[in-house]
Image (cartoon, rainbow, N blue to C red; front, side, top):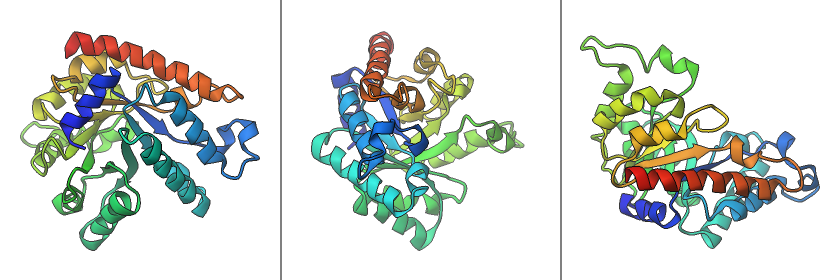
Length: 274
């Protein structure tokens, strides 16, 4: 999937919503816990309920790895189900990998071949050779951490360099040259909206994956005003605010309502800024 294909889906659904699939067994509806694979059954119901409102799905691998082999099997079933039933959804492995050489190539094989994801999140700290193996796959995406919304991001990302730039600006400027706007996007936290204008100066045409809207307090209006471009250019993620809108038997219907509410807001923002 190239940037034009992703924008086509944004236009079709009038949405740039990315749904985080971060299932915790302690938060799943009780009636699912007696099924053979509660995580998959939860994911399946959420996907079916929200597919008309979202353009991307982003399983955070920590929630699957924590369940051991069973968690990996749930992830595999989820990805296969999406590919078979919703082939146009953009699938992101939120893995935050970052290694070099053969290890990076094996991670790329894992998430682009063994698991047919469209994209994977990566840490850029180890430099170009930790990113390049993922860019060698045609029609796949590296989503590189640019400016994150956690409090600890100030420890390094916001440190000022000798020339006055901040470290995240140096990283994004450098990494932006590794790949094209069809293969590379950046993570920028919604709670860092005050920096998005500067991010857009650094990477005006690249897609941005923006977590933090909803439960984490980021503003969809502010992020959209500063981050949307003529090709869309944004995937705004919401996880807990949608998938845990209810923990009762109506969990899927509640998720559908929350996703549709965000989609309607995004439709108006697309009309305003694109």
